[in-house]
Image (cartoon, rainbow, N blue to C red):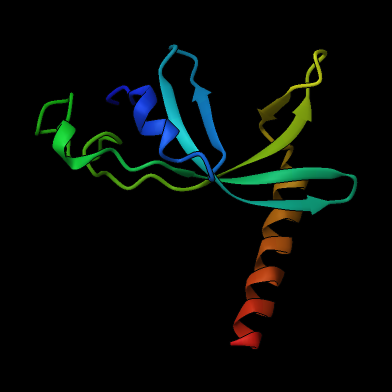
Length: 116
């Protein structure tokens, strides 16, 4: 995935930008689409940031599923916890938490559709 420049992120100040680092040290940038409270915890729906089309792709064109050149990448759900410094950290939810968030999200979407 191409590195985002600080200027690219500054333009998105109104959106919460979350950087997720995988086991191999690769950084992925997400926008916090929605926060859903379930019980006494908050969960974030994180949507991948689209790479600027002008930047190009770092992988070979043969890899049509790659995340950096337009391959579909789904939103993720993360539990929002606080670390020992009081800063927000995003962690994987348990299976039960994940199911509860999906249910709460579906209910929110159903309510919004009913209002339209």
